[in-house]
Image (tube, rainbow, N blue to C red):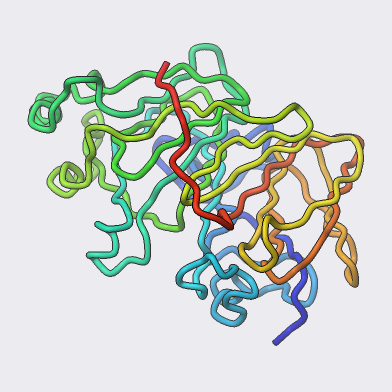
Length: 325
């Protein structure tokens, strides 16, 4: 088994009809000829960019290293537990829903898809749609799908930079244009598309309605902490923290060996320092993976930076308290 150190991953860009070719300010280069909707930072096909593991995919490393990479809280240990993405919506995303763990496991998948969105930047009036409006039944929602007015039965939420929105599995939702989001989710890409504004894409109405919950925990999360260190969300599926600093940060896991940690730069550049290896520099839109077996490490900003840290909770956590405004 190779020595285990933190490593940098190369993002994987995914074309989406609702995306854009202008990914600024996160990425300054043009990617491909078609609109990009998602940049996957921890996809299984993302390749390592640094150190002795360079060239290997994240999926290959999970098979090789197991819990020493993913952590004892990751079940199964040979699959990376969190999929982290940048979203660049230039048009409305479909109205969709994701299955919970129980429903996903009934179809042979390890887990469902609970997610959260951190708003990295937002134009005035940017919105998301979260959950069915109070009193709306599944039958009424199904009828609205066929009558092409489904989006009007969802809660419209105004968003601004710095907001954290929690979207537990079973929540009907859609993202509107005008904001760049950082999505942290259980590593599942199962999406049931319920409504797509007449675009010619496949719908999954029967499966989606079966997965839909009329009451969920979705909404804006009230952050805890201060500007230098903020707990953005803690849930049974993940924790997301934000650090803003001009000075080096010394970080460690919540519990040794419990979970892999992922660091994502939102603004500014930084470098991860870990004993026995060259520093790993990373810039906005890049992710550094700190394996569960690694101990303490430091993040050194270049002048100043805003960095998110994502990991699995080491101890049982209840659903977060949210509001739908």
